[in-house]
Length: 444
Image 1 (cartoon, rainbow, N blue to C red):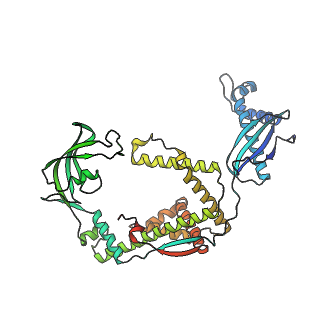
Image 2: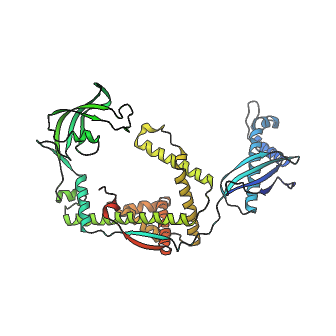
Image 3: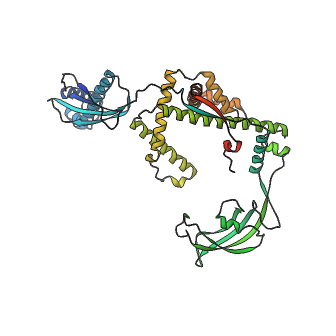
């Protein structure tokens, strides 16, 4: 390495295999210049240093050096290394991803301290042509049948239950007490009082729910069931147990009529059924459009990843995985505060993190080279869509625009829309019809 009289010097070394984005820079800092910087810092510190027996600013330099010398030297070294590193990456036009790792090395020149900076750079690539890539665009048009199906779903969500004096049938709700015994002894988790259960609802083991069919209020019944071999409680898995139940009530489901009360429950103040259907249709069309767009977006992003097989800076992927782990733990804690000590490892999210970072790099480059930057009217359209489902959309719009940082979500979505539109305009797109239940994720 060539030596100079400057405070620092640097030379570039070849990237290390196995990470094609890793780079190394050898650096040297001159000790005399570091000493000068330390002296300058200590003199500055001495002006305000207070110590018993001395007036402020009159503490002897020797004592100031004893107290703050280590800190001053560390800061001076850090500043010198940061300076030479910045000079080197600018000179070589390197785009650093993440923070460098600084490793000391044996000095080859007297009067210098030498280091190696190990870091990653952003991948350099040209966005690939996607003209030959195929994309199936799912399409669906909301009709009267789908509106009525949605109304039925809304009715089921508002189901009430009324007591009946007849044997229980599938769909009925029972209130029961039950006790489970294995080899004549009660087992943990096998007993409950005033427990609501739906016949055929899938809440309990199939054999348990099958035994509920035909029971009546006030009845006591005992029956045997065998727990599955893969049951989560290992002490019960594969074992025969006996349950005794006491049926306290049998209730049948009752759906609300599609009338004015139903309309008012859905937010239609005057109870007009035609308005209700129009509102349901509008909301359904909005939801269908959102789901169709999400399917297209997934395909579009997959096409971009497949067409641009770039390397990802490990530092960025690790940081993203750590952020995802912290978010996951926060969500768990919000659902159940007792899970605050739940171990959530960043390594669980590595694959997702790599994909996110890769997409971020590709999308950023695509937006830059194809000028897909968002326009104000596009952001406003996204905000209007956010606000459409609220009672007072104008207030929601005002809320977003009252603080610029609140628009970040809308801006990001608008940019994604631009990218998806670019993919649709450049890939080989074919329409593909989809069933309503499949699109909405309805079972059966």
